[in-house]
Image 1 (cartoon, rainbow, N blue to C red):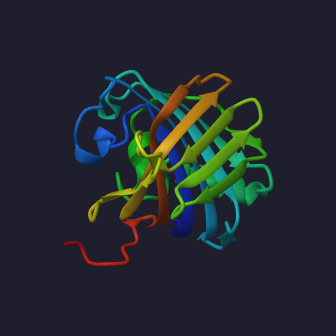
Image 2 (image 1 turned 90 degrees about the horizontal axis):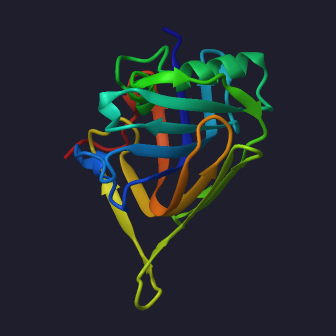
Length: 214
């Protein structure tokens, strides 16, 4: 197993309402799960290969709850990555060189039946985790935006967090509202649903925890 680790930021949008039942070991509130995700690796490595500043994204469609499988997915890798970096990122994204089910990459990969060929392309990505704003754009494939949840009466920003001491993706996520529209072989359209903004620190054993679990 090649050791890897990275710190980064993510923006995820799915079809659930703002809480996202999956975060609480419950079934998706629409009966299915469609999702778009984008991550910037602020710093990281795969063995001796540096991954600093590279970006990745993915589109997923599951016909039912994620754990029931039969998912369809497509991955996007920063066109600025060289061959070694592309191989490293794809291995991480598909759950390879990772302890079984230790990361969200490994968990989701185990539920995907149709994995389309990866696309190496320019990924425009801007994520402000604390501000709960973000944008991801992949020409012909992804348009995703995120913003804070607002009080429907006053318009004031509403802040909410999900704290998962034993999670396989993050320790704490800021929750906002996000919308996505995709093209290509995996079509998703989501309007003002669950938006997840999180700082990530992962390695091949799972989440690198900044604090002890409660």
